[in-house]
Image 1 (cartoon, rainbow, N blue to C red):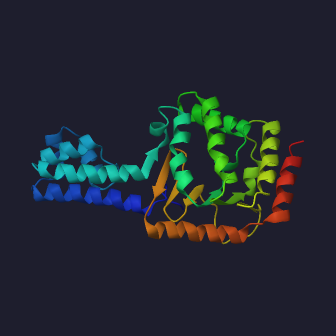
Image 2 (spheres, rainbow, N blue to C red):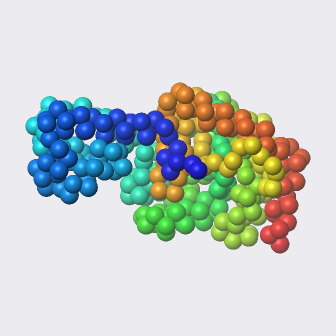
Image 3 (cartoon, rainbow, N blue to C red):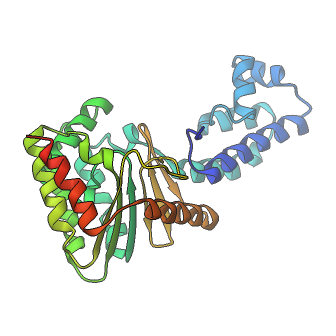
Length: 283
């Protein structure tokens, strides 16, 4: 079973903070119940914090350190906690100011990346979405996450930032599960337009599109959607958050997974046939 947090580095960062809290408590000669009493918490909260079951807030760290008379530890722990937070970005938090700003915030990363490797088990990747498909998808996201409704502007921004697939200096390798072609976003007309656009994008010299056929025996299981930006970072998309992976070993692991998925995929005429078949099923 897959971990709800794909990044081992994030797990390790959380565990290191929890262990430091435990160490501070022990150095102070306090039990967990005594820390809870001084902090005005339930004992169960102390247990959750020092077992890394619940990530601490900045206020939790300050309160813990004051209860243990270890205020000098606060700055380093806050810095470590914010580093861990940067690995895990809750969608609800980053979408508070609207979806358009989120689309635009990624432009600098996209412009400096030379090689993109994108695996999707859920939807057509944003780089190759039509405006209509993006609007339908982002509308669903805004509804589910309860974020401000700026879908039209956000969709336009998503399509605008995708101009880099037609510029020199960038290469794109897309791998899609066949189910992505069959999941109707918007309505059949929107989906047909999106799949037709995907066929046209396949002709671009800097773009490779592979489709992993459904029902094929496979040694590599379906993964969460992820994008590898050069060898710099990996972005992993979950329902509630985005995980940013920067540890070289983990980036290499996602690179290896991409290679495994590539071996399962079909390209060229075979991929176009699967896309055309999906379009035909919309009639």
